[in-house]
Length: 241
Image 1 (cartoon, rainbow, N blue to C red):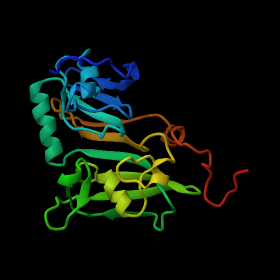
Image 2: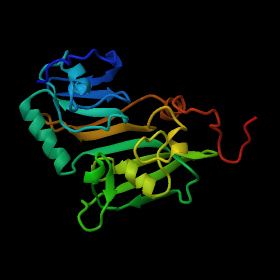
Image 3: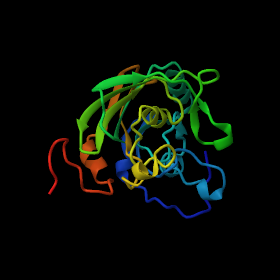
Image 4: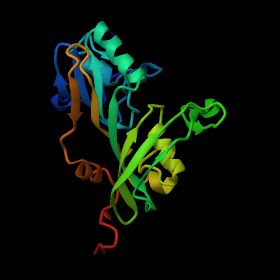
């Protein structure tokens, strides 16, 4: 268990962060801008885990979301559950779905990216494509709605590399709006936050072996629209007066 941060919390815990809980697992809805786990330095000790452990002291992290990504995470509430869930993630027995808003006009309705990735050690935390030393990374994508200057896309990662969705979309020529690591300045300033949201998470319950599926019920498009810096959120081909 991590100790409480010495710095004051920047986030106020809200009951909506707890999407589901039982004796063994907890499903959290992480807000954008909050670390999943503590970072380096006392000013980076506030995180989803530190908030959750105030109410569920035995909670353990199984996987992570980038600080600026919002959405679903599963936490284990005991050591046996943690081992089981960690194995499911390692063996790719889980399923995740994300939604993002990306820059530009998509030339295809759907597709996939299989570009191997590794850390750019000289520019950490940036990741780069490396066909010699990179680890296999696969992302499937489907355009949901095209707008004038950007589009809503569903992203399904087969692997779970750090920054995988952000880097793959950039390499496709469509960086995610608000991405402070991979977007160009114009795309970065089109949104107040990274417009990437983990909407769906599936796995087997570590005790009952029941297939569990969790989904954030909000209107994803409407929520992501609120984070845009401009009001030109009209469908492609229409005029905005």
